[in-house]
Length: 253
Image (cartoon, rainbow, N blue to C red; front, side, top):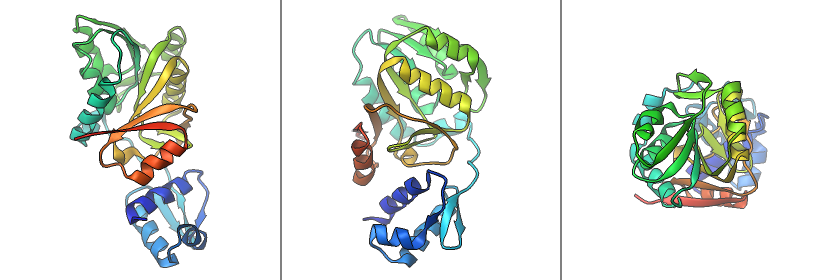
């Protein structure tokens, strides 16, 4: 197993918030304890974990980056994911679009299509409101400046009154068998309701989001859902999600 893939699995082992043991991990992955220690040292510098005597634990969640910062990162991958998501649509599908930069990239591709769109993603209000064949509904509520999206009781109440064919979600991280992680319970509550109100669930996440656990709040995913990621996602990562019930689509360059 490549070190990158082993580190992804180590992060999954930490998602429960419990301390993990070096010797146990060495046995599990059939490598030396020193190899596991090197992996943990690497993760401690980049993925929000803390080394302890004999193991490691998750530390406090990372701070959020702004929407503009996220839009500037992995732009090629996000554009490819957006195109792959578009190919899965039927004309006249009713869509729920979550907040986030990858979902925003997808939403911009809808301007010449015919759909009813329900969204809390404020970055999409102007382009979709001007699209002739888009019937746009914006969920009201409290604005989160970091993500430029709405959350809270008003957004939840409106969302309860609508259903859709497909929901497209973003996240700070997505973990096989666990779900989506975000920084706030308001985000998690709305994402969970969005999933409840749609017939099909799609998660748009570039490879850097897979097995990422840098936030503390979690939204479980349904038994069957679709992950759309990019070409750099490893086979081992994709297999983990497939084993957890996901249909995995890797967007091409």
